[in-house]
Image (cartoon, rainbow, N blue to C red; front, side, top):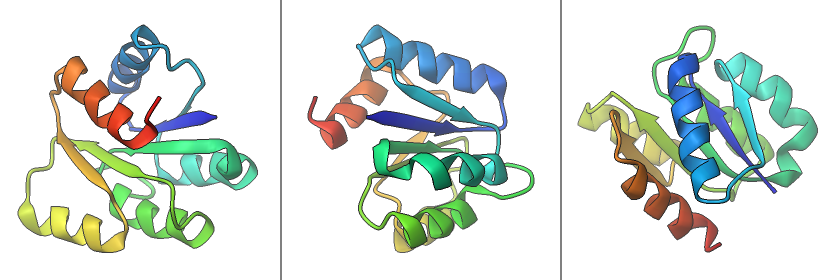
Length: 121
Protein backbone atom coordinates (compact mmCIF):
# COMPACT_ATOMS: atom_id res chain seq x y z
CA UNK A 1 0.00 0.00 0.00
CA UNK A 2 1.21 3.49 -0.90
CA UNK A 3 1.09 7.07 0.30
CA UNK A 4 0.84 9.72 -2.42
CA UNK A 5 2.50 13.09 -1.73
CA UNK A 6 1.46 15.92 -4.05
CA UNK A 7 3.33 19.21 -3.70
CA UNK A 8 4.93 21.53 -6.25
CA UNK A 9 7.95 21.94 -3.95
CA UNK A 10 10.52 19.20 -4.34
CA UNK A 11 11.97 20.18 -0.97
CA UNK A 12 8.62 19.67 0.78
CA UNK A 13 8.10 16.32 -0.95
CA UNK A 14 11.57 15.27 0.15
CA UNK A 15 10.99 16.32 3.79
CA UNK A 16 7.63 14.53 3.90
CA UNK A 17 9.11 11.41 2.31
CA UNK A 18 12.02 11.38 4.78
CA UNK A 19 9.64 11.84 7.72
CA UNK A 20 7.52 8.93 6.51
CA UNK A 21 10.61 6.80 5.90
CA UNK A 22 11.84 7.35 9.48
CA UNK A 23 8.61 5.81 10.74
CA UNK A 24 8.67 2.85 8.38
CA UNK A 25 6.44 4.18 5.60
CA UNK A 26 8.57 3.49 2.55
CA UNK A 27 6.06 2.99 -0.26
CA UNK A 28 5.68 6.63 -1.27
CA UNK A 29 4.63 8.03 -4.64
CA UNK A 30 5.45 11.66 -5.45
CA UNK A 31 3.67 14.07 -7.79
CA UNK A 32 4.50 17.73 -8.47
CA UNK A 33 0.95 19.00 -9.06
CA UNK A 34 -2.64 17.83 -9.49
CA UNK A 35 -2.24 16.93 -13.16
CA UNK A 36 0.85 14.82 -12.45
CA UNK A 37 -0.98 13.25 -9.51
CA UNK A 38 -4.04 12.28 -11.58
CA UNK A 39 -1.83 10.68 -14.22
CA UNK A 40 -0.28 8.52 -11.50
CA UNK A 41 -3.47 7.91 -9.51
CA UNK A 42 -5.42 6.52 -12.46
CA UNK A 43 -3.18 3.46 -12.64
CA UNK A 44 -2.52 2.88 -8.93
CA UNK A 45 -5.40 4.36 -6.90
CA UNK A 46 -6.43 0.91 -5.62
CA UNK A 47 -3.08 0.67 -3.81
CA UNK A 48 -3.07 4.18 -2.28
CA UNK A 49 -3.99 4.23 1.40
CA UNK A 50 -3.38 7.94 2.09
CA UNK A 51 -3.17 11.12 0.01
CA UNK A 52 -1.10 14.09 1.24
CA UNK A 53 -1.86 17.18 -0.84
CA UNK A 54 -0.76 20.80 -1.03
CA UNK A 55 -3.46 23.39 -1.76
CA UNK A 56 -1.63 25.93 -3.91
CA UNK A 57 -0.05 24.29 -6.97
CA UNK A 58 0.19 25.10 -10.68
CA UNK A 59 -1.83 23.25 -13.34
CA UNK A 60 -4.34 21.79 -10.85
CA UNK A 61 -4.65 23.01 -7.27
CA UNK A 62 -5.23 20.74 -4.28
CA UNK A 63 -8.93 21.61 -3.81
CA UNK A 64 -9.70 20.68 -7.42
CA UNK A 65 -7.57 17.55 -7.02
CA UNK A 66 -9.67 16.43 -4.05
CA UNK A 67 -12.75 16.45 -6.29
CA UNK A 68 -10.96 14.49 -9.01
CA UNK A 69 -9.67 11.93 -6.51
CA UNK A 70 -13.12 11.49 -4.98
CA UNK A 71 -14.57 10.60 -8.42
CA UNK A 72 -12.24 7.56 -8.47
CA UNK A 73 -11.75 6.93 -4.77
CA UNK A 74 -14.51 8.04 -2.41
CA UNK A 75 -13.08 6.68 0.83
CA UNK A 76 -9.26 6.89 1.12
CA UNK A 77 -8.16 9.62 3.58
CA UNK A 78 -6.88 12.90 2.15
CA UNK A 79 -4.68 15.10 4.35
CA UNK A 80 -3.97 18.63 3.22
CA UNK A 81 -0.39 19.73 4.06
CA UNK A 82 -0.20 23.41 3.22
CA UNK A 83 0.84 26.92 4.22
CA UNK A 84 -2.79 27.90 3.59
CA UNK A 85 -4.63 28.82 6.80
CA UNK A 86 -7.70 30.42 5.23
CA UNK A 87 -10.74 29.00 7.07
CA UNK A 88 -12.85 29.27 3.90
CA UNK A 89 -10.41 27.04 1.99
CA UNK A 90 -10.37 24.58 4.89
CA UNK A 91 -14.16 24.34 4.81
CA UNK A 92 -14.13 24.02 1.01
CA UNK A 93 -11.54 21.21 1.20
CA UNK A 94 -13.56 19.39 3.88
CA UNK A 95 -16.73 19.71 1.82
CA UNK A 96 -14.88 18.28 -1.21
CA UNK A 97 -13.73 15.28 0.84
CA UNK A 98 -10.52 16.18 2.69
CA UNK A 99 -10.19 14.37 6.00
CA UNK A 100 -7.37 16.37 7.64
CA UNK A 101 -5.46 19.66 7.48
CA UNK A 102 -1.86 20.32 8.60
CA UNK A 103 -0.18 23.73 8.35
CA UNK A 104 3.41 23.97 7.04
CA UNK A 105 6.01 24.13 8.39
CA UNK A 106 5.05 20.98 10.24
CA UNK A 107 6.45 19.00 13.13
CA UNK A 108 7.39 15.50 11.90
CA UNK A 109 6.11 13.76 15.05
CA UNK A 110 2.71 15.49 14.84
CA UNK A 111 2.54 14.76 11.11
CA UNK A 112 3.21 11.06 11.73
CA UNK A 113 0.55 10.98 14.47
CA UNK A 114 -1.97 12.22 11.91
CA UNK A 115 -0.74 9.66 9.35
CA UNK A 116 -1.01 6.84 11.89
CA UNK A 117 -4.46 8.00 12.95
CA UNK A 118 -5.64 7.39 9.39
CA UNK A 119 -3.56 4.30 8.63
CA UNK A 120 -3.59 2.52 12.01
CA UNK A 121 -0.23 0.92 11.21
